Image (cartoon, rainbow, N blue to C red):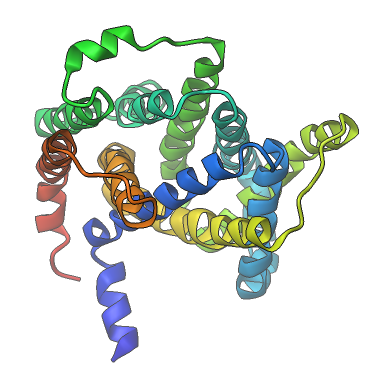
Length: 307
């Protein structure tokens, strides 16, 4: 019964869309909390070592069987590992050390705007007017929360050089999301993910060694290790499995709209765990985000209603 229930959800990607943003909201909160104690590249390496260690026992046999196909797709594996595993995460953690949280929240919301551009440039994929409208409505919802209900306040946001790291990180993930569509159907998705994780770690390795040589200290207290375990299992392994599944079934553009839900879950987590107050502008912004998300994904939800 449980297996049938899980399979039914797996066949309905519009239900899965909610989970990666929830996991990434926790990652954002933890990333901010660890900014002063955990070196950024070390955190990026740690999360993927954990994720790969958990995944490998389940896919090692498939990896061996499909080694020839993986080699044929080596450039796709390399690019996905460099952009989605190494570049996005390392740059985001470096930025979190200096970029104000409000700037990070606003700049993160540009991902659904970048993906259609990247999809058109790389694959000539077009976007429906309904999806574009949904992206814009949800983007306005994020902007409403960031501006605390005063859109003119966005004009007073100060952006420094470090903010470019956030945009560069988001661009990396936009490219990764679009490139995922090029994975051959014959290539097992979990084997492909494991290969990109390993490749991403290889890309991160020289930067990690440089960070250690520069005097970085790795904390080994229970709180830091628990945070890395959460980020590695939930925000890395599970979130990427679900995100990749949604991209494969819905496309990068529609899946990208769900990234705006990170703001919804971040506000919810802050309310539950940090006792931060919920104001009227939060409610209005969340309604706009959910409205835009529904507008962009409803046609896909109807299409995938039956397994």
